[in-house]
Length: 189
Image (cartoon, rainbow, N blue to C red; front, side, top):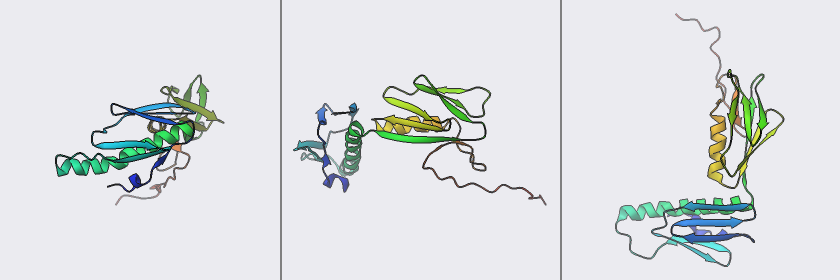
């Protein structure tokens, strides 16, 4: 069983959590998120601005399902905690465009990447995600859904992943690259 479920999730002021037919809906100052979760054997209780997650008391048919439910408890706790944090604080990822002559420009709600292709790459984010450009080398991805923010950042990074020899490409701001040494001067036998 996950150790996370021993801690309750604190619901800040102006935040509400509802559960309807295996769908968790969280409302907060920054917006509203809803996700479908498998809550067949999981009990989610709200007591005095705290959310408690536990196994339902009904008998679970076999050991395989019981082990699966034990693993699922921590996952459900993490997802609900991320939803609560998202509607209150939001999530943010920063990307850097590194390369000689490579840059990024704001284009309406999307971005235009000039990253060494013969054409500019234009990317528009899905609804609920905001893209900002600082200077012409930094992209900021913001939103209330942690999963969606991470996926959009990964999609942008996939347009030109960092090169392992020179370090050119699109990378996360906190990503540390280990550069390989070039094979200059090595002669075949």
